[in-house]
Amino acid sequence: MGVLVGVRMAAPAIDRPLYVLFLALLGELLTSPIEFYRGHILERRFGLSSNTVRHWARQHALAFLLRTSLVVIAVEI
Image (cartoon, rainbow, N blue to C red; front, side, top):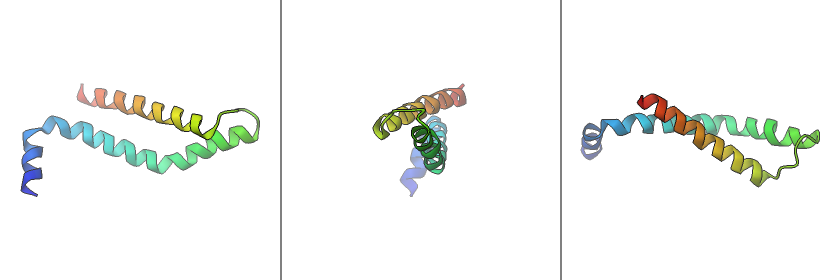
């Protein structure tokens, strides 16, 4: 435990991005099922999309990475 406290004291600049990443992952875990239903299942059901699950997941992951990167940059500024 003391080692972790020492690491946190030595590198406070790492805390903010890790905190943002933790919150982003938590939000992603909570909203992914709803996003999957809305963004993939409903669109396929009504013929609005021909994407596969793999394509949807790839696009969703890329959007998450871009969104999280921009938030980390904004927090650091």
